[in-house]
Length: 147
Image 1 (cartoon, one colour):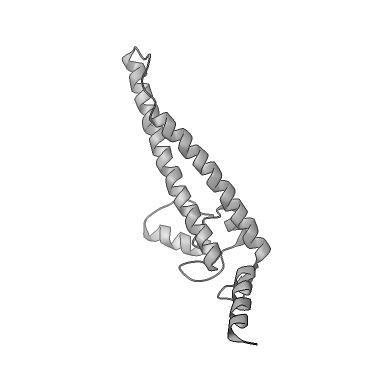
Image 2 (cartoon, helix red, strand yellow):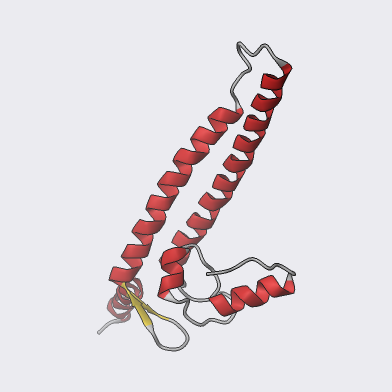
């Protein structure tokens, strides 16, 4: 078998399945499941981003009272904060989709161990397994629960 054929078969295998450090494999079906989950989350985040950005740009037409102006300013500020969060989420989703393409999705970026599938279902953008995430948060002094 020539080198080109072997290489193309290797690439096909790398797409269909990938091995993580401990030898476990996430097959194409699971990768497709997570890709579709991420794409659905991305579509929702884009819709939310557009809605929040639009709210943040609304004019104060017809507002008479200073209390209404203050309330509108607060709503606009909140909408813009939420739009920023949605933008960050889209970036995280894009990074997770790239990890699927390069064969590292589901592998902890800190220790190399597989990330538990239940964790990935709950947080498909996860980059770390629960143990490493807890260690990172402890080092940062955070007391937030993790998945």
